[in-house]
Image (cartoon, rainbow, N blue to C red):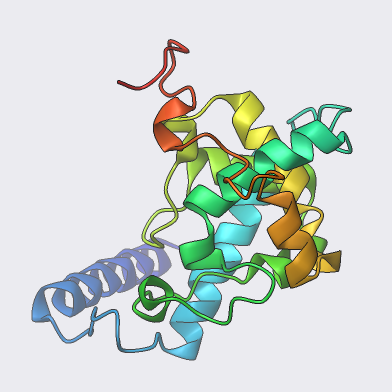
Length: 191
């Protein structure tokens, strides 16, 4: 038994040394224009999915996500902050999106597989090493739930519907400009 424990400890030490050698060798290409290896992609994506599901399980979803005013508010926020990475109906790509690795999901196709609580958690807390910011640092939960309400409508939305939802009758953006939204935890407007 003691011999087995010694062998196990030796193998653990050997694995730690190999891992440190890999890290310090610089052999892994971290360039954003080089795709991840399939195993790395699977590991990162599965870790994110499981982490989000675990943390979102306790989130209570508000009952007003179908309210037209909430959806319109979320559409304006989405148009300001999300389309450069996650696109919008009728938008094929952006310069920013082209340079990101991993490539951000096109939300019109991804949100159908996600619960409102998962969308809320990701939007509020962001995702490390993915360029997904933690919008909860600068936006209220009410704003984030509005974005979730809008995102849930994306899979069935045409480009025309998107344009109508993100513009007022006068053609002005539905949101009043990024600086007009409440930011920070104190609820004060940004200066």
